[in-house]
Image (cartoon, rainbow, N blue to C red):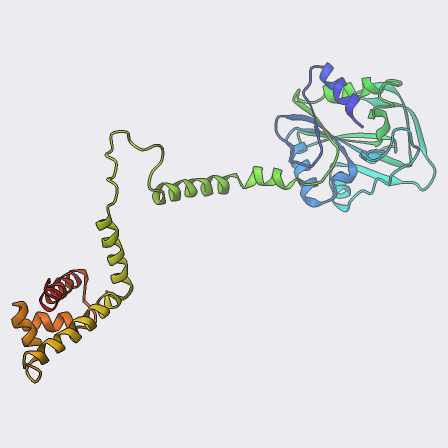
Length: 330
């Protein structure tokens, strides 16, 4: 509804911005043109009042100010002033009156001792400092200025070209500080805008933590060094070694040793019986034939599980020695 007014302000060499959602007025803004229904809570009105008292100029529009109203319809929306907005206007010395169904018709508006010909009609009236009720009121509030216009149609696309509506708008924005002219269309809050405005330190912190985690946990970044020696291809012995290491970590080699132990004990007992040593010390008998100590034979055949990989290697070597003795080549 304010597109023509925005382009008119741009032709006057002002920066014009149109906001679909509420945001806090900035110090670089000169004039804000705000529908009254947007200032619906203490937060919005408090931010607006602080900005005005610091030097901003606010023009608050009452009737025909919402974006849903058609310029070609006679439908009149209720200004619905919130208690927070009424309190802000009263603190500034502006009183809003609703006089029932009788409309107030105005053909001119006086501002800064200049009369502007307009076509305004509203059910609502405003007065400044207990003066006469009119369609427009303006007061100084702090360093800035607070203005209320009851009929917003004179600034809308269809009517801004009539009478002296554009000249009146120019007079309002020329009184500002020369900064941006802001036209506010809605009051909804954007989640992404809030995240971008208030959550960016958290997002940056999470990004730094993620980068540190990747740097610590990933083995490398980028391509391999061309000068690095390539690892030799694993042979059959390496696969056997890896398999044995896995099996030892699984049950310390007990599963691997058990079948060979059973086979060697059985063949050793048959050999002892044939040679007349059935009733003797079986482990000493095998130790004498293999020419190793009795303790090593006992550990190789009777120890439940090797203590570590080195003991498993020695046990396997002793079992190989016993296998050679008990299974001589033919």
